[in-house]
Image (cartoon, rainbow, N blue to C red; front, side, top):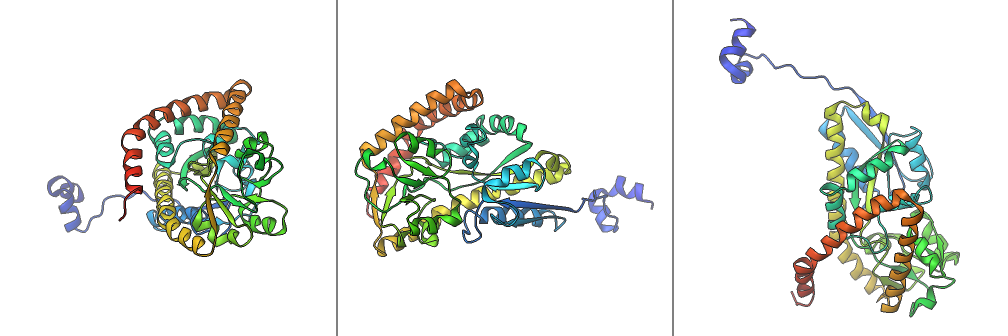
Length: 359
């Protein structure tokens, strides 16, 4: 019996029984490098890129190998967009708002003050217009973006002195991530954009008066409670932080369709795992910080209101000066309005009730 007869009469079961394997498309061997904006010591946020790399390797049987490099190994933490844009590396893993100096619209893909929470932002990216709008914007930088994790709502940071009113922000040298510094500046503060690995030394030496990073798990690892006693919440500038994988356009286009699908699947896995890690690990870390005498305090209502007012004024100005910002932000804000309406009825009501119960 020849091969054609086997295929015709026996189907796939007959093929396997006869020892004849169907043709398999040979996949190429690919090597990529990821330049991270984060230090290796942070197994959550730096770990997002490791999750991505491991998933890609496993799904391709080791033929698509991705290595992850911490901030400073291949390039500075804030040099990764240039690295991807000019093809020095194939991928960057970073927080988009670090690059608001290139264009404020970068921040919308990551976190903007008084923006969406993590679920809302993910919804905008995967089922709203977020991914489409951000990819249109990133195209001019030779970048294709993929979801890369989310921290959830962040804490408001560590302060040497209490914050009792908006007046306490004036003159404050505050390490705050990226775009939020524009709001702090409007409130009279002095924003400092310092990479994560350099914050502790700056706070310890008094180069800065306060610093925010992410939340209890990372903050405990970085030891901020040892050099500043007051731990404020919430980080109104980051109701969530969407991390992203920035992939060089040519590098992505050179992949087979199967490999491109694997890149997206691996990015989504990293996104979900990172959010899960933060939600799982922050509660225990907060307990440890409280046990170590950290003074956990809410920002006064007057500070929240002044911050919101300054933020809305900034957005109104950007709508007039930056057409790319205006286009993306208009869609973002409309989506957020609907999300807040929905969350008010079910999610928020349920969460508030449960927070008042003893379990």
